[in-house]
Image (cartoon, rainbow, N blue to C red; front, side, top):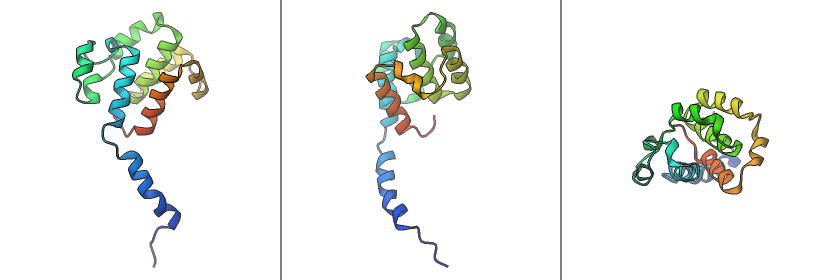
Length: 129
C-alpha cells in the first residue's frame, strides 16, 4: 500500500510549521494584551510584574478580581478582558462573556484596532495554556 500524503498537504506542512514555529509569539501577544487592558488584572497586578514576566504563567488573569469588577468596567474593557480570559479558562470566560452580552465574533466589531490585533494574534499563535 502507498501511504504517501497528497502533494497539496505536503506543500502546506512547511508553511504550517513556520506559522506555529515562532517561539514566544503567543506570549508576546499576551503581554501586549495585558499592557492594553492594564496589568492590575493579571499576575500580581503590578507594572513591574508585567515587565519581568518570563512566561504566560506569570501573567495569569486574576479571575476573582475580574469577576468582581466586571460590572463597573466599560463595555469595551469587559469584552476585551473576557476574550483574553477565554485563552486561559474557557468555563470562566464563557460566564464572563455572557455577562458582557457577547453573542459571537461579530461583537468584536466594537473593539478598536489594537485590541482586535491582539485577539487575532492570540488566536493565530494559541496552542494551549
